[in-house]
Amino acid sequence: MSNTFADRLATAMKLKGIETPSGLSRETGIERSYMYRLASGKIDNPHKYVERLADATGVSAHWLGTGIGDPYDPEPEPTRPRPLNAAMLTHVTVVPPEGDWYEVTARVPDVFTSEQHKPRDKKLYEYYYVPETIECFTGFTLLVVERELRPGPGLFLAQREENGKKQLCSFMISYKGLDQTSTRQPDMQTIGRVRIMDYWELDMRR
Image (cartoon, rainbow, N blue to C red; front, top):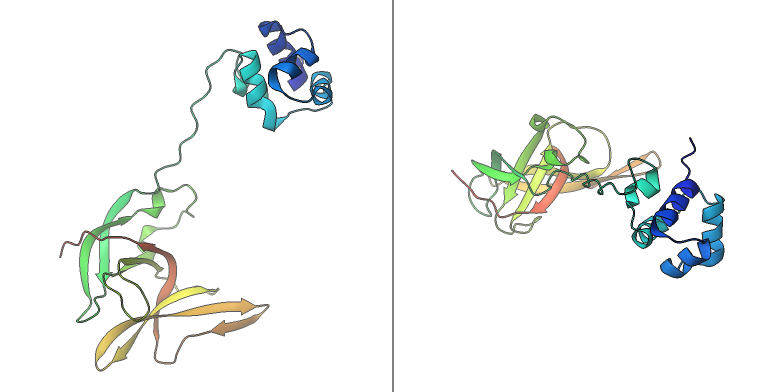
């Protein structure tokens, strides 16, 4: 049994009591010549007009556009992505403007709840937090850093020693063809590539 868009449109028009493509053109405001091409099957699926045609004929846009289900089936619930603002509890290294770095357990954005995130092990990341502005980062900056040093361009987190104290710093690696350019200084010890940099008020629990 044929189930083309033209077939479904004809069914929808019949259910609504609209006899001609001209009549449906008047109901929808869609150009008459375009409507005749739809009705004759010369245009297979007018994605941009499906909702308007469904509203005018009183049928399900999902059925009209796909042929799945019946004309009066309720619209399926949209697939909702997992929330991007979900948080998880993990260890975070806090880098204050003065004094030693220290670790806390804190809630951070859980990027692994996103379907768009490449499925990599959470254990491959470290978290660094800058509560107040320092030389290279503003306050309330949360950095998600890859533990593994893989080749490729990007922003990299590093540390250096100055007057016997650790300082957080960063450098860039970029490529032009096969030529690599790096702003890394000889005294920088690479921590890892910055995967995510976000402004976040950390709930710190020392």
